[in-house]
Length: 114
Image 1: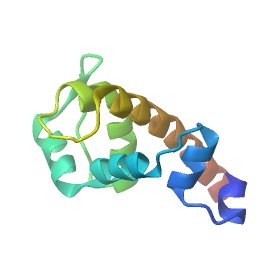
Image 2 (image 1 turned 180 degrees about the vertical axis):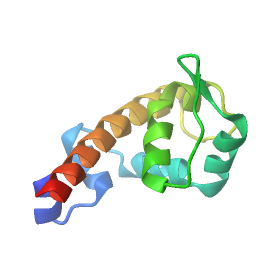
Image 3 (image 1 turned 90 degrees about the vertical axis):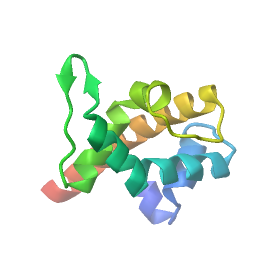
Image 4 (image 1 turned 120 degrees about the vertical axis):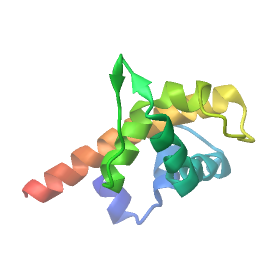
């Protein structure tokens, strides 16, 4: 993650490099979907259930995004959102972004503690 800051790469470029994704446009589309306010509202309305536990979104954007990323199967299967990306692409990308988000949060935690 320090390389991310040092080289001034965008999150999209870092993901593409780290996970061998060549299509930055696809990554940008996924980010736009994940942070879209209507999308967050749709999830909030549905109170998505994961592992028999209801997940309610808070108003803390970072925590909400983390919850959404953890719900990647619901993202792909259950939401009635028309996405012009094929199923395997979005499934794979959501998983990769989930992994990336974990790395980012871990890095931010380390930064806060130092």
